[in-house]
Amino acid sequence: MTDGETFFSSIGEILGRRHRISGLNSKSGTFELHDADRTVRVTLELDLLAEYFNQLDEHDIPGLSHSPQDAQDRVRVKRIAMWIEEIFESDISLSLLEIRLGRSADGRICLVDRRGPARRSFPPANTNGGYWSADRPGT
Image (tube, rainbow, N blue to C red):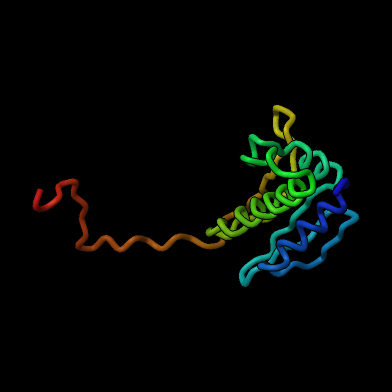
């Protein structure tokens, strides 16, 4: 694998195994990720994706340097797909609008998210009659 478009297609293929994807555009690096309650836009600009791919090293993926080069490419693709899935699946308040690549203040590329207002609130905990104590009976 050598270019952003190839990486993008591989990431889309992996995410498509577990999630519903629409609007997959390998030229612009965009697609929509869906579940029952929402649609989240994913933007992976191809130039940034290629740079991000090459930026990932042993610090980001322990054990990477001990793999053959073609295996390293597959591991990087799987890791990026996994990070996108983690951001998407951990959005319990349904506020996630977009996942994209961006450049941090130190110049490194990273996945960032854009959120809107929470569309689902957390139900209050049922604390009627309940209490917590550090004391353990029988000790």
